[in-house]
Length: 197
Image (cartoon, rainbow, N blue to C red; front, side, top):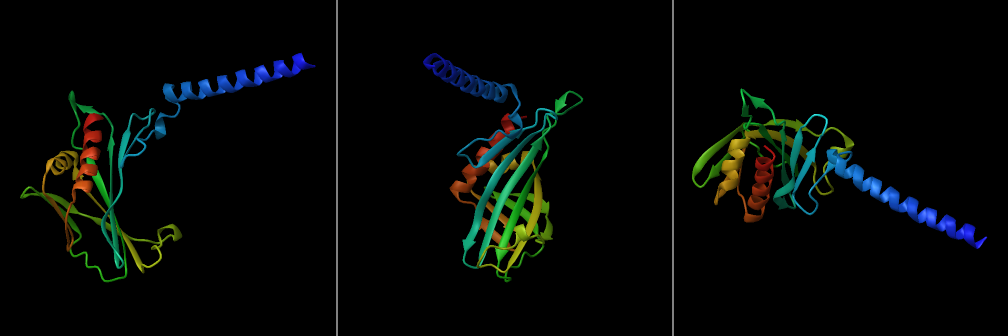
């Protein structure tokens, strides 16, 4: 009987070890590459091995955090790794998403996105706006309204913004100077996008 119990225990340990090794092997071989992220970072990188598309995401960053207005900005770029006439495509569009939760007294003006990088203007263009409609998009407690806006810049413009020492942004009528923490997150995002090209 003791031999049977010992044999069963040995088999259970071996099965557990094999299962763990198999899971790690599958992850290394690409079975889980689709949702790989950089833990502890504000930047997330996901690669779809089937399409070859790498999606780089900047997690939401707070631009305004006050009792009457919470404005966050996130960003995403999809790099397809395509070449045209032997030259790698470098002007993919970086989409910036702005999420505004407020009490109804915010003027977004023309809703255009502009950057001022060390005194040089970088125009991001118009943004598309949308009003929240689902329960998941309802404003957080303390806010009455929630709006989302999406605008883009070219990857080359993002690189220019990330290299700046003094960066200001105008989104509609809202003007902000980006602090060092946000600039560092943008630099990490731009660096990740640059290394995946």
